[in-house]
Image 1 (cartoon, one colour):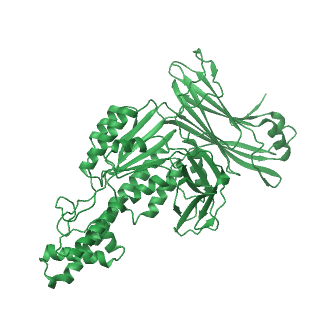
Image 2 (cartoon, one colour; image 1 turned 90 degrees about the vertical axis):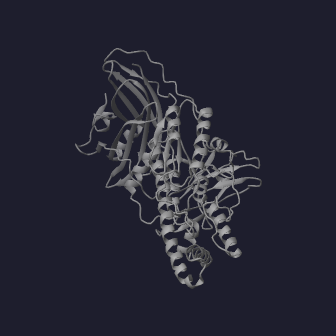
Image 3 (cartoon, rainbow, N blue to C red; image 1 turned 120 degrees about the vertical axis):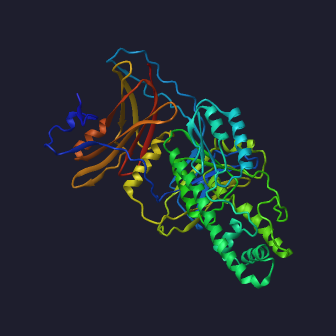
Length: 573
């Protein structure tokens, strides 16, 4: 017979026999899960894809095959893993016979999990022209019609936040959401004579580029003062003011696009399964927003979200400053100014895709550009990602200055192999909070369906039919305490264990979650006896009949070790 503590934790009564009352302290408390916090972490993740000369991913490398450098200094790789994203077959739960009300039914302890794919199509309706938008949405529609599979969930999201559709298996809803897409710029576009384009404005306002200022001044002089050089000083003043305004507006719109991507990554962390994003945009400047790009990259890497990007402009064509159909025309009679203007526009076309390229390549995704075959682009960007390696290290003596740290990943013997890896990260600007970091680690593990077994945990499920519409589900998590790290203090062995269990429905939506903290304050004799039996935590859920994915996460606060396991439960109506 076992002693039941707090209605959920069990072990043999002999553990307490002969002990004075209160000699050992074992308590369990329910905790309201708060999975909404963001932290900076002193653990840098680097996702690496290695391909051969034919572009085929290499899956046979080991930790010893990699070298990792931070600002040129070699780093110790503290974590290494090979990830092979693949959709698993839908789980077939243990076969059960319908039970009469009031009788408990136990599921098989090891049914496989069901893994859905969540594909987020993120359209930058702030920067993308109507022509590019129409081309891209049609390509997305055709791709989905040909490639959608059972278990897929697709969502349509926008930079403006308007006309969005959350994840759904209904392609008709997705089709309508794609048709509803329209350009929705934050501020109106200034295409008037002498208007300063965003990249040119950046060069003038942020970089103090004299050549860019001279080009803008000459154009304003021609547009507004008929080339009268007596107004040269006034034209230069207006060029500087226009550049400041255009630079501010461009940064505002780019911030809106990045904020939408960050929000989408946060949203994706609440879904289990394979999670990826395809960013569709005509491009936007991120020259002044590189720290923000780094934060999004960090969040996506820690949340196991793959970011991909598709340049909606299609095939690149050389910029001409004399074609009146183009947005920006060189209003000048000087050939030298025309050449400089053309060069800046060409640089702008490249710089406007840098942010998308960075987010995709540094999170292990695909960047598709310079092609009008956008449907092929969706096939590449929306496909399951190639197998990749995860390298992690903890920077030593890291200054909290927000500075950029260049990374370099090398192969010890990499002849003929191409390495796609994160190029750098930004140091945090403040200290992190260990308690908040712990919550985020649990959140990331809970919403990932990857099974991890750093701690020896076994999970079983039972359900108790109350009536035709109510069922009580019991989830039992048993932990072997041998590898658990205890901290010795005043003759006690101390540790806190977090047990978090969540239920997800067939569409991957979170139904409910419970978190329990087990606080252990044990004498040596009690711990020795407890090691032979382990701990079993029982969690109860009152639910309706149906199919559920059960996800259990256990974390040891002293060592930070964490395990996550999946079970599928089918409760017949």
